[in-house]
Amino acid sequence: MKKKISILDVKKCKETNEKYSMVTGYDYTTATIINESSIHMILVGDSLGMVMMGYESTVPVTMEDMIHHIRAVVKGAPQTLVVGDLPFGSYNVSIKQAVANANRLMKEGGCDCVKLEGGSEMADVIQSIVRAGIPVMGHIGLTPQSISALGGYKVQGKNREAAEKLVSDAKAIEAAGAFMVVVECVPAVVGKLITDSINIPTMGIGAGVDCDCQILILQDMMGMYADLAPKFVKKYANLREVMVEALETFH
Ligand code: KIV
Image (cartoon, rainbow, N blue to C red):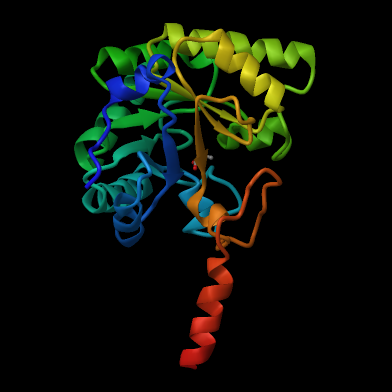
């Protein structure tokens, strides 16, 4: 049976050259399947708003939604490191609110650490949550909670100035004490630039092969979610077809 990795293992992975893999997970049964595989980490992402609840974006997701799903995943995946996502509006009011909600995900959800979106503007929030004893994963590039401000699901860091801003965001997140940073939907060259510029590992999603580790949304890589198909996602199975076929056979 696989051994659960620790936050310290992840933090050291640039030195140890370990390539950790992460997928999203939102429910108990799927968590047991991921736990049975060699995948190291599960993100209970606020993407559950779209994938599990059918919303058009992650913005409506609440703390209660997150705690509900994190609990189920933690129960199903005892040998897998579980990351709980702080939803939109749960950490942008004040540092006090951010620390209180990070505490809730840890205490009520039972996850191993939290993730939040944003660059240098979130450094003080990250620092305060880390000071409270909670490991934090950052998230830069395409940050879906800011979809309205970003004007849609678009590749980020496409010009020199934007790429330099992402590098300075990654450095600020590292300086604030985060143990890892998700880099989403940037050109591969920018994913590599960010990865080479910081000492904490990057977790890439549509950010090229040079990120230290890689994450995909499970329902995308399994070919289950049909509403949106990011160009960078490789499909490893076509479970939607398999399930419809099984349902037709039963019918
Ligand atoms: O919520 C989520 O699933 C995420 C991933 C896209 C990294 O933030």
